[in-house]
Image (cartoon, rainbow over all chains, first blue to last red; front, side):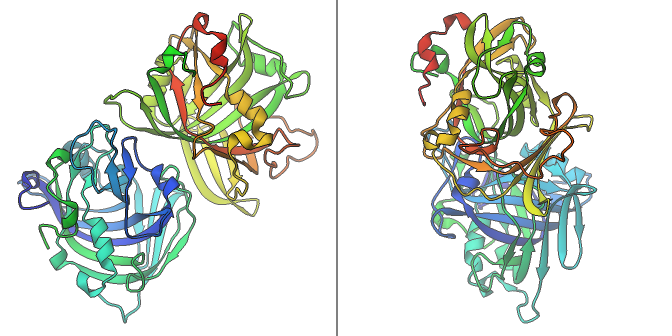
Length: 267
Length: 276
């Protein structure tokens, strides 16, 4: 959210440890993740015919509203799949800046309060899931014996935490993570999911993403290995960053121009 | 739907990945799936004494009306049992959907109360794993009470995708899928029969079909007998091919569903789909 965004006055904020993998997936498959009224746009992350999809495995802590509430700060896990560079199609009834936006076809979390808050203030009910996180593995399951996906990672001591500018390949990831989130319509709303990039730390991860169910309809991807963000823009990473989530607002009042993507209020 | 079909002015459209298989069942069993008033008609696809039944394990994407509405996006799974070559008062052939199981409430309500399709809620999951030592996906349909309804396992590799209208082996299925839907109002109960055109955009750039090796498990009233009594069921059923009509296929095709209209208003020109 920018300084001129009045919808940022009321927000939720917290700290995140976000482990992310960017996969290039066939555009025809990624299009199936989108609702009617959204389309994929130009992007500079993957080769033609493919589109980047972010798989984020997060640990959120100290999450609280910007106004006083009776709720204690929340700690929870969250797994989300993000499709950046989505645009409102020309035949949509929603006026405003067409994009680029980040569409979230699937979110899982394990906090009822966070889910209720999401429904109450952001109008979207996320799905509850079970999470098991160890030092090198993050597993998401819908119930006993029903694993959805997992991320296993390895760290090399030589590649430690650095500010985001320390890993030049992370610039493209930052560009994608800075795009406003867009709802599933049919009247589209957006909200800013800003990160305090000045305080963010990143380190490369070597990961194996192993989906065990097609939990995003149409996403038929097998297990995939990713090298670290230090070796490729499509590499895996662990990001430690404070974040804020604005309240939803119509794209008509988009406060961010495409040229400013990546330069958030915090940067 | 044709350019003559006024009911097509407003329609529901979307995209789909359909995994289907045609099975021959005894006519008495198939007739038992039909409501009063619908009769099985002549067909040449299956041996005498049997009638073709289609099983479809579908992924439906971006279903939306052709006019602006506040209805949210409809992306869901749908399993259905379809009976082609059915006749209503001597008119047809029509395609009757005997059972439909979906995992989203909104298309169930719309389908049942607007189009008269007998849609029911189910839990549908698609998982990746190993079946008979082969990497495969499994599409599992479970009733709300937790009972298994049907499942389809299919191998992940489909190498011979073709344009549906140019795949000779797909021609009989294309003929079936071009038949007009017949359903019942109110609420899929009857007694009023209605028709709607469920057209597929066969020539769309994204339309393609390929054969897939599958393994199907059905339960309850839908149980399929072992093709050879006394012999174990085959691990994998070979895909649809020129010499094998009873194989499975994966079809990717955009579709449009017209508004329902009464059978009396149907003219012969409706049989010629705009897209076919």
